[in-house]
Length: 37
Image (tube, rainbow, N blue to C red; front, side, top):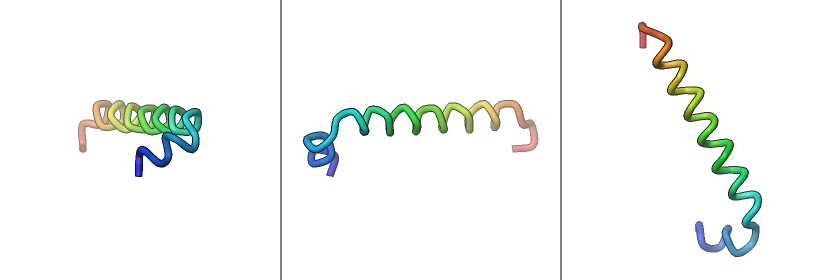
């Protein structure tokens, strides 16, 4: 799957990874700031 996507479109995958990393970073910060979790 990853290989097919990479061949088809490299830029969009980079954007996807950036979005995912940004989301995970936000989630981590929220969990870190929330003592209840």
